[in-house]
Length: 573
Image (tube, rainbow, N blue to C red; front, side, top):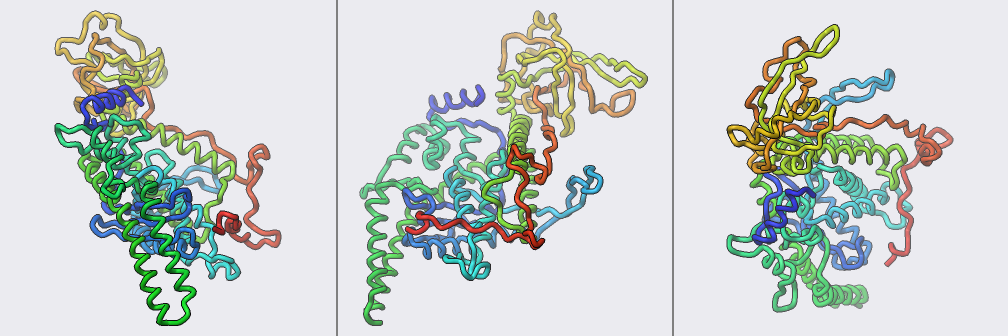
């Protein structure tokens, strides 16, 4: 957390209102997201109680499980979930556009560009909190290895036809959510806390109602008091006015309302099974239907407030303009969705429970690279984020005071202009360190040469500007959030520009800064480099588990898919 973030939290605690941590929206929001508010039985993470799901704010679909411990009822719930979620996912699969991507030629080993198709958009799933993301991953793991009656007629507990496919998609979304900057599966609490700072801890911000109370607090009211009411206020029956659904439940709700309703349902179900004749069965069937409607009403009463809160959070986020680089990251999500669509269509087996060494290393390297890329892009897009990097000494902004054209030595001299920048920031610069600025969407690098000692005596210059005039990522716009940073006298930094000046002896127009330009230079690279090439999976050394199991049987036939999860004591409740 940067100094700017800490300052925003202190201001929020002092004023009683949330303070902005960003001036733009750093995550892409779909025009038609699918909102999922799950609810699970207390103490049993794998026993869903119900869910609200849908793409329309005013007409969500309510799914319930009258007895979460009943396997057949859980399968019916998952089947209904697949009926809603899979058509939404598949509606994005056929709308494609031509795109180019770089692949390795298997014959030459060289990187070549290949034209392929890319889905024009991707489905986006939004849950209330981080616990909802983990619930999606758990659902995916519990379903993707299940066997249907068509796949395995001898399966003891066959799953409904579309449930395994739903498990594969939820697993993909859960894995993609671990990639920094991804927007396929988002938690609303993480979205809001990324863009607003409150006086709460990060753990308290996982309560969506309390977090929105800080953001929506009217003028003259205290966000802290509103958040406290959202967490603790109860009605005359002792039930929370803002239940923590998605997927947790309140113990008072479990003990006072839910447990008795489920008991009445179980008694009505047992009595119906033991009915002696049709007349008695008809009366008991009405009693069972009434018990089911009671449970549906209870689930709706717990999930609807959270459903409305998620949509209010989307309204708040839509007031911020989308960051330029968020579109690029969403394109990566579209590639991820397209790739999984192709794997499913090709009939590939489900994702394995445990990745082999090469796959695990690739995933870890991708997440590390995307984390560094996300931090750089957010700073380039947002002057408020860049101000935090400047205060940390990872960037500096200032005004160009002088440009001296020099050339490299050698048979073909290249322009290497010396640019002097007056800045009030205090970057961590050592001789030879490279710095970068954004030039037409690309990073132009320069090398730190020295400090001009005379600049320390000249103060801030005639115009009185300091390092706050350009904390915007280097595109020349004023960064109001960075003004006033480092007011204690400016210094002159001498840089040697190294590239992005064209191939001629004279630099291209606009490629060299001019005196009076306001620029922001960063000590971090704008684009991350790829790591070393990993061996092929079949060449994995024995120290890392050896090669994965062969994809064929000894007879040469394709090996069957991974066997389903073994039945354990937890599966037979």
